[in-house]
Length: 444
Image (cartoon, rainbow, N blue to C red; front, side, top):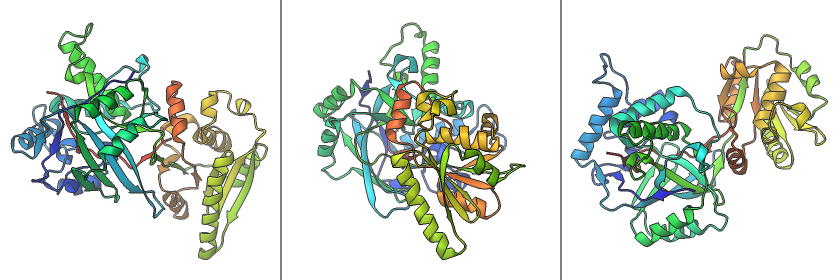
């Protein structure tokens, strides 16, 4: 089962920097505009996490070697300081759910976790990975020997024993606090008390872990572990205390408050034969349909509110998928007597319970002829996290239709992962993201 460990984290010296100005979003969420903004801030982690190529880059001078040099310089000059005692780090995020004024929080902790092959049945994935991002992260790890970003890991503790331990820690003022560009507050409490650490380790020892975010980073850690085993002659009998046998993880209990998954909506364009009437007729034997049309701005507001409310309610009581075409929202409700095994015979029972699979297999593939190959190539589909962005693409003539989804539930993610199945591309968007740079794990 899961093994976790305290570690001597490197952290920013708060006497030298403003923490809010030096931490970043995860590397794969950093847009070019964000990168440019981060680069203007002194000592921002972007210089290490995601530097820019320069003319004349070579094998000895490139984004990765420059990152390593900057890291060494910051350590030597005291910008980054290593904790003298191994610890774990309680991490709290306070955020506002998009579209809501209410602030909520979620709390977990940062520690090292043993890097395990998926076949061991300890760590489970729910997404497939791409080779390009892994190659980039591996080259950075080879150069810096440092993990800078967090792996977002889920465990399930219905008794909430670890949460009670964390409650006690967070009664004291936080040692570090930052606010990011999404108005999310991040707080950190280092824990060096050996009894507290031992209690958390004991309670985690029976856990199976599901990767919520960070599949590419986890598989990079796996690849680096195997590489170092080979280089040190330990491939047959690895030294399990070697630093590359562990990686930095942030752990959250699925039974705690504040775990939020946002949906990722589908935007459809460039279909040569786009006929909504024919599409609707093709679904009439499987879905009940309700439309929300409007002809004025005032009516649009009412229709949008009703559509969003009814789509969410439909997802709680059954299966409901949304569509937007110019001037009209539509909800397609799957009929309760529909035989999903006949409708989607190639998919597993668990896959058939996912709205995103129902959307792709039935509405998009059968209704519009958008094949899985076309989805992979993004010939006709792009993705929007915000419903307003998906709707705007249609209104502005950049798309023919937008399909609006309810979010996946956390229990669906864990059930799929523990069953050894992966979810379709762009199925989950855990919010908010875990910031890079709060703690760093230096391997050598």
